[in-house]
Structure formats: structure tokens, C-alpha cells
Length: 133
Image 1 (cartoon, rainbow, N blue to C red):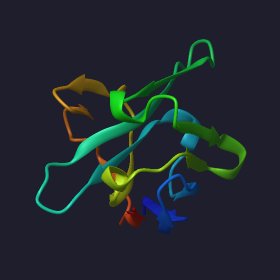
Image 2 (cartoon, rainbow, N blue to C red):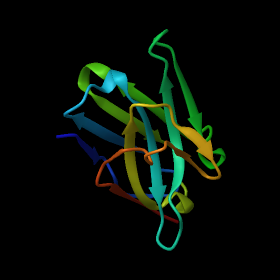
Image 3 (cartoon, rainbow, N blue to C red):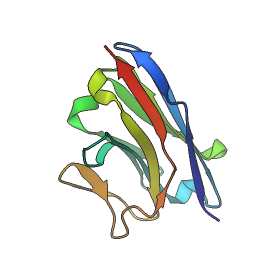
């Protein structure tokens, strides 16, 4: 059974930092393409960050939505089957439920998020991030 479990959310003031974690089980992380997404109340889900690791070379490329560039960093630890999102200089507009997702095919940017033919396939339950001014 595939399971993704996010943690690390919380409430911070503007300018604060949080580090989200996404622990995976039931699948081999090194064979996946993984990303972070968020959804604020009344808004559509949007892509936040994506890490694309090419199996042929083992090299990773990271991608970010414009609003978080320079503030958020996505990373992964394959040995721990864990994906991270370091969030610095948080702003009230970052307030949302944050989800990690994974698939076995590369994600593609369409509109305001990354997608695969099956969504991505695997999703965590989400962790809430609230930033107060």
C-alpha cells in the first residue's frame, strides 16, 4: 500500500520559516517524480515545487512556481524515502494546505501546476501552513 505522510506544518508570523516533510512508504522513492502542492480555501490547487530526478543520470532539477522562488527549497533524501520543503520568509499568501505528491512519470507544468496523465497518482493527506501578519 502506497502512503505519503506530510508533517511540519504550523502557524508562524510573516517572515518566519517552516520545514515540511513527506515520508513515503510502499514504493521506491528513487523511481519517482515528486512535488509539493498547496490549496488555499476557495482557490484551486497550485504547484509549489517539483524535483525531477532523471534515472539515467541521477541528476536532479528543481522547479518552483514564481511566487516562492528564492524563498522555498525542495529537496529529497532517498535513503529516508523523504521529500522536504524548506520555506523561508513566509508571507500570509503562503497560507494553505500543503500536499506532497508522487508519480512514476515526469510531471509537466500546465497552467498553474504540475500534472501527469493520472494527476499525479499518489497524494498525502496534507499539512496546514498558516502565516499571520
